[in-house]
Length: 428
Ligand code: IMP
Image 1: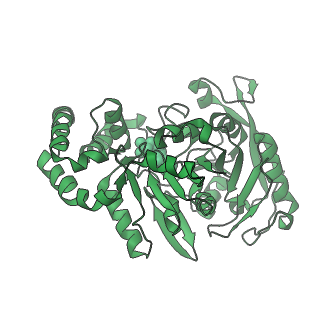
Image 2 (image 1 turned 180 degrees about the vertical axis):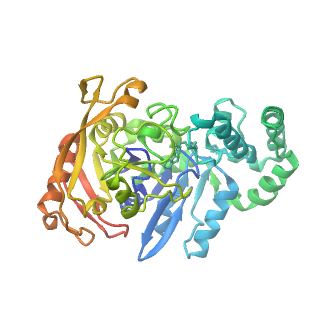
Image 3 (image 1 turned 45 degrees about the vertical axis):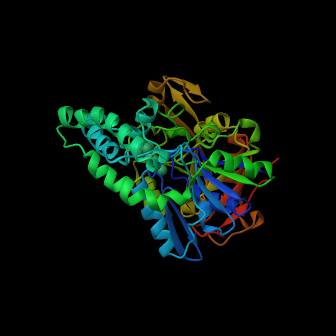
């Protein structure tokens, strides 16, 4: 498959890194197309753990060019720190390529993210406070600075001046915060970051098209997930970019006709961090069990994730929104000790059964899940590598989920290690 997209199908943290890493080994290029360092993947290779925030997972393979596309928002200090850390772990980061059109996260974006959240009070979104929303807002308002501006001091200073005139007054006059000075920002961004980043910055659209034209395989790696999508997620409890498959076209500069396969990643249950509706959320012992056994704390912010049962209504919608070819299920082993497992097959809203995602957000807030209950398997799955080794109950659970979604479950994760997975159904 020359061009494949990997996309999260729930509210993020599905374990995309593991399968992106697996699929990546066939690829020449792995391209991140949206988001910023609000993401966090952990990939375990031969017992060694690599935490990635901005750099695409493909960096761990020597034959892959990892690419940060134009749709990503880049905090250069964070990127350089990540490169430095990987370098210290023996990973060659010299192949990393960064789009000159990607927008920069500036120190005042982080400040704004913090004060906006504080002022929202009980209505806060629960953002990662990394400056993601304010950076994308500046991009849309056309007062953003881009990676390419780092290499033209005159332009950088002129654009910064315009941006600071607005943001500086907002921070000081409305939020009573001292804004960062242009000099401090220039020293950090132009003085410290630009020289180290420069060899990595290029026209990544051209790079992607040259690879596709040469018949090479390209993987587009989404961060966050379908229901955090700015347009299709549970607005306003979303991120400020488009993780859905269409976002790959915009954020990497390819048309939809290039895409051959879209792999959705879904956890065998559901988690969410931050605020927002979550129909299958559990507030009981099973919910705590999923947090404890599934180690459901953010890789990035350390926040405890909210947990709940698998929601097939969401997944059916994710299949539509992303044109999913197949779904890879992660963390099935976390359900190993449960007596029974539930799958939400529909919602009840005002006494009416809904098989599909309600169009109005207020309805989703009131949605009561209708469950099918299946027996648990009480068998450790972590060493299983073939479908025929699965206990019947686990196989039935996957088949049930697959039928509910209407697309094949291609791969199943049974542990954090690179080798801990099994193929389940053929992709048509
Ligand atoms: P932001 O992306 O920092 O603006 O946060 C907006 C919402 O998206 C919040 O609810 C975050 O918790 C959520 N979010 C952002 N990035 C991730 C992620 O990588 N995994 C899960 N949730 C995320």
